[in-house]
Image (cartoon, rainbow, N blue to C red):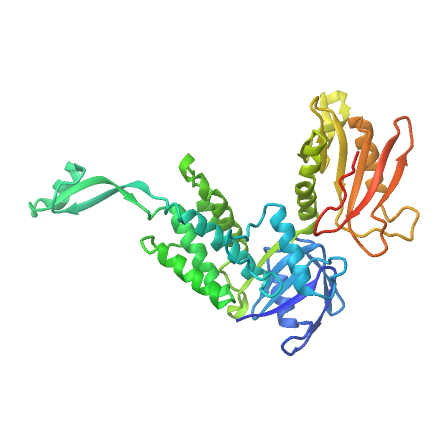
Length: 410
């Protein structure tokens, strides 16, 4: 079982010649595996002098006998990996990327289980909920040389195979079967997860689910194979399961590195996750004001190039509140970084401010908001007035990751 080392984003980890169990470092061998891991985002970490420093990507990286669990830096919980893990899982859940809640049952302990076990638990729970309605079956065409007529007789094959066996009939027929690509992918994913689960309870759950698919062939399934799957209306309930299969198959690559060292990565960009989480938290705010919430839009262009008759420099705000007439009333940009409270500019980058000014002008929007995670000694929100021909109000706001406490936005 791989050792799990929990570290915080932006933390620097030494690279040493040898290490003892539990030491906050990785060896030169682990660093070599990290360099060969092709599934990592290109800017997930940076090399230092005999060290590595993680960026804003959080999740899991396995390097042979050690699993790095990179957790977000949450205000007030920086020294508590369990609390940071819980906050990350809560964000993933509220952003719609995890379910991890069984009605009438006990939730998994988010502070003591590893991230991978939590992700596996979520997959098992969602799968069990769908299996209550039964395994998906489809009619498949079979050809078989049998002793009774079934379906239709294939004359050419009958002449080729059974001239000397008059008691045999070469038939083609339709059979309702669970041995289809969707179920093969699910079973393959379950087998992929079984050796990686650390909790005995979870290993037992995975084993039971594998037995549920006993009538499904053990087949090597590639992600490209899943692109061929088209779900019918009655099968759409398995769409989230299929997406999770793709995520696990992409991350938990069954390939190995030098010397049989198993490697994989499953990381989330905290910039994107924070944006999705903020959008999920703001949906009730939009409804209360009679607005619609739009993510990554509406799209507009900053300029028009006359010689080629084409709009250029596309704009798409992170979050936009739109009224019934389709007019933007509030534009929100989410930033997963800390403010500099000692500065008059609050650490807001000039590029971000230019971007918000451009939104105000192009969308003729009266209210703007830059949103950051909460930190020490922060007042919660700061109000700026963007000066120019069009004057707009800009709120620089910091929020607790656990929940949004204020609903006054206009």
